[in-house]
Structures are given as structure tokens and as C-alpha cells.
Length: 288
Image (cartoon, rainbow, N blue to C red; front, side, top):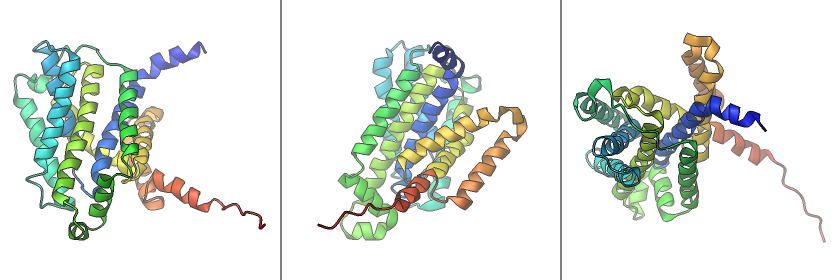
């Protein structure tokens, strides 16, 4: 029992990374459930992180007031982003939202209030591991509770056939706006947690490389499964640390794992347990 505090002290940074990455994966998963390849989660994360950190560090706001406003800003940006990209689908939507993320990064790089390329220093350590996993559990519980809601059904129909969804009365435009707003709010939570556990923000923290990682988490876990996305984030966060001795070859290893999942389990980790559940024999009841 005495070893547990030592293990936590040694690996608490990795545990924090797993929790934050899992929240980001959930943010993208909610978009993929609606068939939207919207890759702006890193930008949403950066917006909330900077807004909250600037409010606390520069203007002296309490975190309890700054955090909801920061998350609300990310949600509002997500909803507004849905309007100009309304007609875009697939790879075109992905490119447009990646471009938006680059705009956010460049703006942060050139603003004095964000610290520019030098970054924003002096962020106090106001949050810790329990806050990260409490947020993750809360978001996961809300998504689980809403899995059979009318909005979740509208997302599923829109993902399968948008024209058919519109034909049965689903407001696909509203689905897109609400989906991106929810994605912005979830990624915003990750941004606030990242800022106040990392103590330092730079524009490179929210560059395309992070968005690429978030997409990999969802592909590994399963593009339409929130639980799979969380597991994918955990696996792909731990893997580079577990193979740290490979040094420059760690990215190659991650690529090999991704390729293996795409080839042998196209549905991700979530598809593996679904397949196992289908193979379980159904118990026979004795005839009366």
C-alpha cells in the first residue's frame, strides 16, 4: 500500500495526460457520431485554455468564474464555426476546420496578451488529477445518459444518410451546430484542465500535430464509440512512454499500431469487444 503514493508521484503527469487526451477524444467522437469530420478540437482547447488563463493570471479572476466563461467561449466558437462550413462534407470539412485551427494558432502567436511565441507563463497550479478524472467521468456519464436521446438518434440518422434524415424531418443544420457546440465545450474543458496543470501555454501546444493525435485516438478506439475513444487515448498516450527506450522510433511504433488496427480491426478497439459479445453462446432454457 505504501508504494501507491510513490507510483502516483512518479506517474501523475502521465495520468494527467491520459485524462486530458481522453476528454479530447470524446470531443472528436461526438462529431464523428454525427458523421462530421470536423478537426478543430485543438483550436477549441486552445481558445478555452488561453481565455481562462488570461482571465486568472492577467485580470485576477477566480478560476470558478473564469472556467465556465472559457468553456462557453469554446462552445460558442464551435456553434459559429458550423455556419460557414454548413455545406462542406468529408475531407472538405476536415480541411476547412484544420485551417480554422491554424488561424487560431497564428492569432495566438501574434497577440501580446497570449505571450506570443514565448508563451503564457505563471499559470498557477489550481487543478490536479482528481479534477481531470472527475471531469472525464462527468462528461462520460452525460454522453452515456444521452445515448438513446432524440438528439443522439438524429446524429445517427444524419451520419448514415443526411438526405434521408432531412426527409424524415431532422434539422441537419441544427444537428451540426449543436454537435460542434458540444465538441467545443468538451474540448474547452480539456483546455482549462491542461492550462492549470501544465502551468504554461504556447501556440504550439494546439498545433496540427495535437489534432492529428486526437484523430488517431478515435481511429484506434472506434470512431463512433465514446468508450472506445477513451481507451484509444489511453493506449496511444501510454505507448510512447512504455517504449521510451526506442527514442526516435517511438513515432514509427505508433504508426505501426495504427496501421495494424486499420488493417485487422477497422472498427477499432470497440469493434473487438462487440465481436466478442456476438460470439458468446446464448444459454438454452429447458423446455417445460
